[in-house]
Length: 79
Image (cartoon, rainbow, N blue to C red):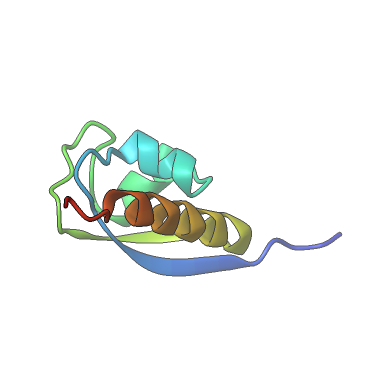
Protein backbone atom coordinates (compact mmCIF):
# COMPACT_ATOMS: atom_id res chain seq x y z
CA UNK A 1 0.00 0.00 0.00
CA UNK A 2 1.24 3.45 -0.78
CA UNK A 3 0.25 6.24 1.57
CA UNK A 4 -0.83 9.55 0.13
CA UNK A 5 1.31 12.35 1.46
CA UNK A 6 -0.80 14.99 3.18
CA UNK A 7 0.35 18.57 3.16
CA UNK A 8 -0.93 21.31 5.48
CA UNK A 9 -1.10 24.68 3.80
CA UNK A 10 -2.42 28.12 4.66
CA UNK A 11 -4.87 29.32 2.04
CA UNK A 12 -5.99 32.94 1.74
CA UNK A 13 -9.68 33.18 0.88
CA UNK A 14 -10.41 34.85 -2.46
CA UNK A 15 -13.61 36.48 -3.63
CA UNK A 16 -16.19 33.84 -4.51
CA UNK A 17 -14.59 31.02 -2.48
CA UNK A 18 -16.93 28.75 -0.53
CA UNK A 19 -16.29 25.83 1.81
CA UNK A 20 -17.64 23.54 -0.90
CA UNK A 21 -15.58 25.03 -3.74
CA UNK A 22 -12.39 24.88 -1.68
CA UNK A 23 -13.07 21.30 -0.59
CA UNK A 24 -13.38 20.37 -4.27
CA UNK A 25 -10.31 22.39 -5.22
CA UNK A 26 -8.15 20.65 -2.60
CA UNK A 27 -9.83 17.22 -2.82
CA UNK A 28 -10.90 17.19 0.82
CA UNK A 29 -14.22 16.69 2.60
CA UNK A 30 -16.14 19.96 3.15
CA UNK A 31 -16.95 18.99 6.74
CA UNK A 32 -13.28 18.36 7.49
CA UNK A 33 -12.27 21.69 5.96
CA UNK A 34 -14.92 23.43 8.05
CA UNK A 35 -13.85 21.57 11.22
CA UNK A 36 -10.14 22.44 10.79
CA UNK A 37 -11.10 26.11 10.59
CA UNK A 38 -13.93 26.12 13.16
CA UNK A 39 -16.53 26.93 10.52
CA UNK A 40 -19.89 25.49 9.68
CA UNK A 41 -20.22 24.20 6.14
CA UNK A 42 -22.65 27.06 5.52
CA UNK A 43 -20.39 29.83 6.84
CA UNK A 44 -19.68 32.65 4.45
CA UNK A 45 -15.96 32.94 3.90
CA UNK A 46 -14.45 36.39 4.15
CA UNK A 47 -11.97 37.45 1.48
CA UNK A 48 -8.46 37.73 2.92
CA UNK A 49 -9.00 35.30 5.84
CA UNK A 50 -6.51 32.48 6.16
CA UNK A 51 -7.71 28.89 6.28
CA UNK A 52 -5.80 25.75 7.16
CA UNK A 53 -6.07 23.03 4.53
CA UNK A 54 -4.78 19.47 5.03
CA UNK A 55 -4.83 18.06 1.55
CA UNK A 56 -3.07 15.42 -0.50
CA UNK A 57 0.14 16.92 -1.91
CA UNK A 58 -1.07 16.24 -5.43
CA UNK A 59 -4.24 18.28 -4.84
CA UNK A 60 -2.23 21.15 -3.32
CA UNK A 61 0.05 21.22 -6.36
CA UNK A 62 -2.93 21.11 -8.74
CA UNK A 63 -4.74 23.88 -6.84
CA UNK A 64 -1.62 26.05 -6.92
CA UNK A 65 -1.29 25.56 -10.67
CA UNK A 66 -4.96 26.45 -11.23
CA UNK A 67 -4.72 29.55 -9.02
CA UNK A 68 -1.60 30.71 -10.84
CA UNK A 69 -3.24 30.07 -14.19
CA UNK A 70 -6.37 32.02 -13.23
CA UNK A 71 -4.26 34.78 -11.70
CA UNK A 72 -2.22 35.13 -14.88
CA UNK A 73 -5.38 35.44 -16.98
CA UNK A 74 -6.76 38.21 -14.80
CA UNK A 75 -3.57 40.25 -14.87
CA UNK A 76 -3.80 41.67 -18.36
CA UNK A 77 -2.94 45.16 -19.40
CA UNK A 78 -5.96 47.33 -20.07
CA UNK A 79 -4.35 49.55 -22.69
